[in-house]
Length: 404
Length: 126
Image (cartoon, rainbow over all chains, first blue to last red; front, side, top):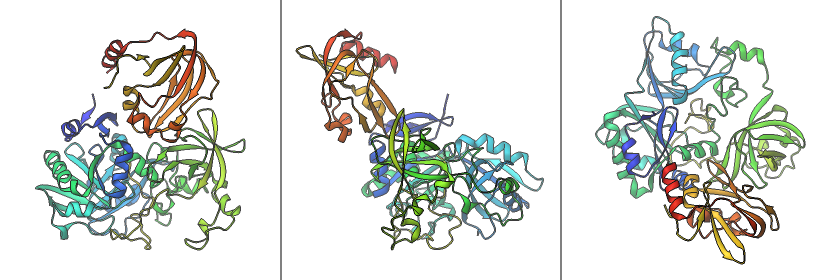
């Protein structure tokens, strides 16, 4: 029997179509449907119950050093009230999980992990815990609600003191009162839009959810399910554990090199990554130009040579064409640039000057034409939320990641 | 759940309408479109294709799922509703209007359910 989140009854009442996911019963969509929910998040705002996500706290005098060794990103320079994404590697340089660390202070952190990996993460982290650090799993006490989309800040400002909301991408505020619920509020998300993620105790979650929907309705806010969460993250080219990431896919193969700080003295998986050297396959974007939808598991060919496999794919609702992410032979990474005609070279530099490279995908026994294109499929036009594009953006580049 | 009387149904959620002259029109039921969600792609057979009962003759895909469509009758495809390939969402909007193919039946039919029997089958299946 699946676990029900604190919002289960509200989902049922709102016509949510419930499906089992990672041991939870979660809404995959509401009456509006995946496409309408997806478009609402791009144009206005959407509200997601993501209470299945796991929250661990790490405290103690050795907490910082523990995290630095456990994770491949560098937590030096992360201020109190900051969040930073990282893959968590195994000894072979594969990925145990990908997660976000919230720093309260040097000796206290919250780590948000994927629901599907919660037990595995716990076992991995607990087995490596020094005496000076304690680890607790708060997941069963906490609900998480994601408010995503360009109208998010206006909506949240109706329910909380606007000046106290986190202003910059990948920062958070603790002990915030939102519609009477005590919340941790971070400026994070998994949709490619501006937005917030709110953590509160389960008993406050229903009133918070209803207050958000109520305040947001005039802005076009609608509840959204895991279906739209998946299409939104795919369109924004964010990897999802179990698809673009796994125990046997390295973060470099997954294109997450900017989160792997090889100049750190040490971290779990570092020596394995050095030993592996340059990745033989890389995550790339595909645009299907023929008739069909490339989905997970579809094999990718250049002529008759197999060059890779699709890790996620669907019709991209906002982009309006079928897109996919695939792990493909690294030789094909820049092949478009080599064959490039130079069209459209002025705007964003040489990297985009290439014409797409033609390949084909085996879609259920049928070869369908596609091309390798530059990720992401969608990038929001900045202007609404202050976020640090242009800076190195160690916390939040466009391809930063959260799991469903 | 809209299950019109007068049509016949399969356990794989296709509907069949006899349109005279030994011809049958085939589409997807309300239950099928509801279960799939937003339909974004339809592949259709060619006119003249010969079908046997149980053949996969079309594919429908939603954002999340792929589903085969099985032929409830044997015969030749005499008409294909091509416009729905350009606008698959019509199946969600009007599944009994957005037929997929018309078939000139050659005799054999799958065991088809009437509306009451199909209604009972769907509710039993949950």
